[in-house]
Image 1 (cartoon, one colour):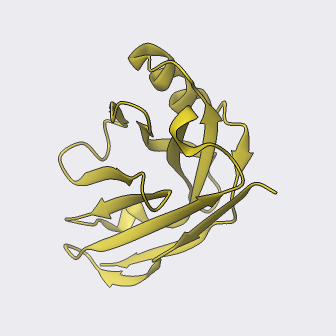
Image 2 (image 1 turned 30 degrees about the horizontal axis):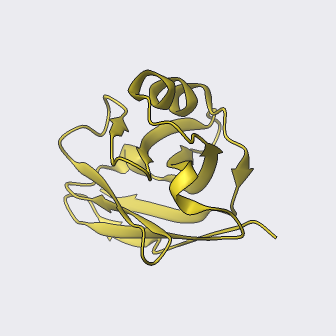
Length: 131
C-alpha cells in the first residue's frame, strides 16, 4: 500500500518559517521523485518543489526560489520542505506526491513537477500565513 503522509502545516505570521515533512512508504523510495504541490482557495494546484530521491537534483517554482528548500532523508523515506520568509500568498493546502523516476533526469523532474504528472498523492496539510 503506497502511503504519503504530509505533516507540519499550521498558522504562521508573514516572515516566519515552517517545515513540512512527507513520510513515504509502500514503494522503493530511491526510484521515485517526490514533490510538494499546493492549492490555494479558488486556484489551481501548482508544483512548488520536487526532488529526485536517487541523485538529489531539485526543481523550484520561481515563486519560492530562495525561500524554500527541499531535502530528502532516504534512510527515513522522508522528504522535507523548509519554508522561510513566508508570505500570505503562500497560504494553501500543501500536498506531497511521488512519481516513478528510476533514472535521474533534471528535465523530466521539471516536467513532472510543473505538469503535476505524479503517480501517487497524499492528503494535504494546511499552511496559513497571516499578514
